Amino acid sequence: MSGFDVDIAVIGGGAAGLAAAIFARQAGAHPGASVAVLDGAAKLGAKILVSGGGRCNVTHDVVRPEDFQGPRKLIKRVLRAFDERAAAAWFESLGVRLKREETGKLFPVSDDAHTVLGALVGRCEALGVRLMTGHRVREIRRLAEGGFEMGHSRGVMTARRVVLATGGRSLPKTGSDGGGYALAKRLGHTVTATYPALAPLVLEGPMFHASLAGVSHEAEFLTFAEGKRVDQRVGSLLWTHFGVSGPVAMDASRFWTTARGEGKQARMMCSFLPGEDFERVERWLIDVATDGPRRGLINVLGERLPRRVAEVIAGQVGLEAGVAMGQLPREARRTLVHALTGLDLRVARDRGWNYAEVTAGGVPLEEVDPGTMGSRVAEGLYLVGEVLDCDGRIGGFNFQWAWSTGFVAGTAAGKS
Image (cartoon, rainbow, N blue to C red; front, side, top):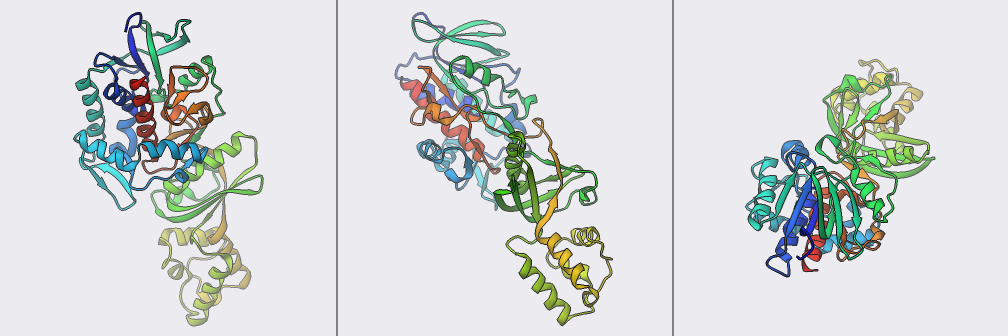
């Protein structure tokens, strides 16, 4: 290690950074190879602790490249090197027992994110990884003789290899404020435009969302950019006082925010009856009116929707709550069907970086070797996690990306 303060410096002590540090230390070709994690926060893993409602959804029971946005072939190579089964087995080896929930999400049996963070930090300490909190790296440069020099808030450090694990811009209060992008640029990388992803959406004031705050149900979201459908998905929708949240809205948000960020006209629609089209829903209502003309509209809709939702949708199209099916005029029925199968959600904005769970955009995957996560433009540099232009849907997929990239980069750096 002559001439360097440390063999491998990991910049960022989040999920990907801690994983990279562990695997780098375990894969070290020399017993004396040293690894240090530098992080600007006073305590590590703030984002781990707030994830999954404080329970930390570490991965999903089935993870596919299609669950991510980015170049699928490259994503597939990375995931294949350390898949969801390997991740689950790894956590079991760290003493973190996992359980599968009905949605396919894997959580620690303890239902406590501290269990996950404690295991990662404990493994680092057992391996002799130096955990340097309060060391925010502000600049980094390549040395003529090889290796890197990093200027941080407490001085300077040199390293043979550097793993950039600084995260994106989501949840900046946890430390991921986008600062790593500037470091990547100084080392020769490009950075694509970044947008909030997995973010709740704020609806315009005239919408009825506030009256449904707290109500959840299955829904289908369709997102359009310049009139072209760019996303369609079904999932659980949660109405809030500000707009919409829940998995279906959060997953769809990245397509709306990206389109808007690119200056395109973005539009989002909601179907309250997933998988049904206009003709089938209209036929259903006609058949019900024929068989039971005295049945109340709200009672009929309440068979397939939460009653509060049924009442609000009926009111949205100007129908009285007590109207009978046989009293429903043709035009009113058709207006109702349009609302049920394709209500225009008047999205004003997303809730911003403070509420987004992940970042869309970052360093292009094409600029790293998927077999090592090594930079193609700066020898000895590795990039992992959210700093890369790859984001997954809700459900533990972004943590899986952290573990997979951390494994690939840490192992390659350690063996080098």
